Length: 354
Image (cartoon, rainbow, N blue to C red; front, side):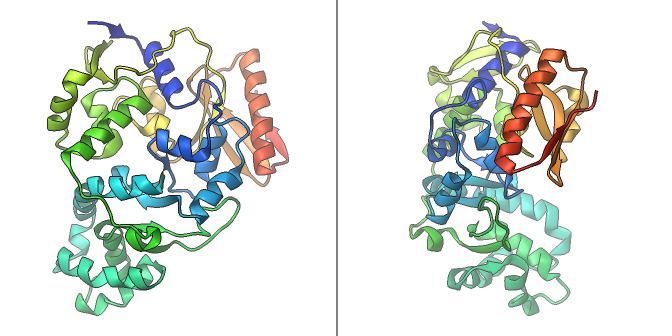
């Protein structure tokens, strides 16, 4: 069986994540190909697309959100993603049991005596009438559960009732309250029924967008359990490799596997980018010693395809903090890419400590 080394897996990941070169794709095509972009921080998806697309105009994604062709909703790992409208209708039902289970595991002690079915039934109409903040909506029904915080009821409702966050939140350069409405009201279509075929399709799309991966990686990215049956159904259609640890890696037949020596350009990634978070074993892109930064919302700079620095932008100053010594050519490439990012954000200056 073919063994894929860390560098081969890295270049496969970069190619499929559109990070080996900037692509001539629309924002819609990129969001769909990547199975969404992580969007806990409303402005972060714009940097993610800027790093991946040629001549990206942030207003393109804003227009998709305003026209309801893309939405911000909870899906993978109980985290907010920007996904296309049609993906919202199919992916939310697939993830719904996971969202409920993860919410309950977190909030169970905060919701004594709360029947989740009753809470969902009482809460859904509130989000069908007009956009509401979660806590404000929960306050309207909180008297049913004395002693339970409206904040916790609202958090639970975000997982029990399929909701989207509506603009202006999530639009480029704009701020807005986190107002929610139901997915079907916002899109004017009903959610698609969850089926085994839908789960299989999600697994195939993950492999196409992330490269050869173990079953544990698929679970870590999606948050879903019980994928063994899906993998079993798909196995006859998949390529199988091993990594250097001996783990079985699954892949779609047509998945790109670039030469491991393919040059990888410097790329600035937004907070919580799935290129880093989308695996159980993230060693193909980030060193173990820095793994904790990825879950704390650090923004990364890829240097030679791997996390080599972090970046922040505050007060118009873009500051890069290397995580390892950078060569002079690497520093020059980081500086050039930083100037382009400053142009996107309208920043003033760039700082890269020696």
